[in-house]
Image 1 (spheres, rainbow over the protein chains, first blue to last red):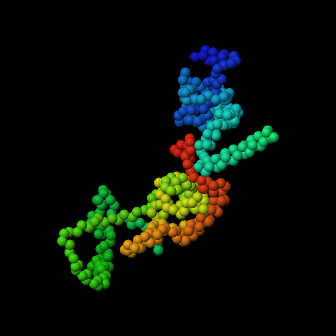
Image 2: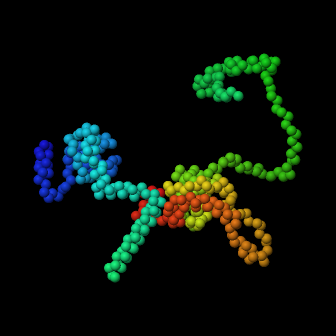
Length: 151
Length: 231
């Protein structure tokens, strides 16, 4: 078991052009993609065996999860194996995980999806009007540019 | 007057149907002996008041040969259908069936029959004051300010069909009568529509895009899943 970690570390250090970029490691932030905690950002705090990890989040009871339920993200925080809840929360604040997530394109996509799902019928109508207006403006500009190009 | 305390029985229940005290013990507890003594040995009687003389009913002219069956008494009091919690006065509703399917209308009130009173407003989308059943509507979460509107006078009778006058039985007049059958909307109803719609239109114009929203029809487009849509 111990040699496994050494080997893993070794490959990490001599990373040049690796096919994998996101690794399961202590402190890796992952997104739960199945089950009761669907959509939650969690931190891997320990690895139980080949298939399962111990995950934790500031507003969640620490639980085990199969790796298949986790989608790894690019974000990693600096923690020791199985930190106390307070330490975990502090580390997450220092690394500013939430802000990094919301800035990343994946995080932004999820926020947009949530917004779209929560749209009211009236909101959808206003959105349609805005899209038409924007399209009209673009076409106007294009017509102008075309005119300038030909003249 | 002192506040009325609820009546408590002087005879506690031991088991259902069995009291603690016997009939004679209860007679003593209730003090019926004292009431009797007060009224000189006799229990006070309240004789029924002499009823006014009713004229003797005439015997019926006709007795049926066989027994006439009497139908069972029906004491049912129908009450209006339970209104969905999402439908409150001023809610924008989407009509799903009928002539105005897809139209977005404003809900005014629920009538005693259970049907909902709605209006377009007429100037915006052509839907007049109308009754619609709750089952044929989707309630959106958009609300219009309805405080300036008075809908007290509308009830189910207002919308019912007018009783037809007895047609004269004459062949020559048949074709002429058909011409008169044409339904012209009485001026009174047109005025009612205007009086209800005026304050509504004012409050609708206060919200940007709401007027065009109500004028447009709703339809499902590609990729819209009704069970996932939030209305």
